[in-house]
Length: 144
Image: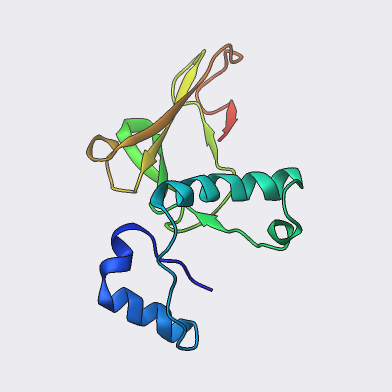
């Protein structure tokens, strides 16, 4: 059973594609856009908490990151951290070392997409790590 919402219900090519994938069945167009948003937010909550209808517990919900994600390294260079369309939530680690003598803190920045230099892409978030042990350059391992 398929439901088209918003502007998708007005695109004939999308309707035809959905009809082909659902053995010729016409997609529904009866749901309100606001209700769809509420259902979309409630479904993962029902799965994670175990509450709600039993049918929700049978769903396999996969979310993915549309852009690839990169981390900034020394010299404003981007290092690819996760591939485009990788499923979330996932755990992935990347090791790096300090780049200065007696470095006491570090800012780890996440970027949307991967280009050679971080100045050309959007910042997704920053993480500050302070109070690191003072040590020679390269001695402290940092796991992001």
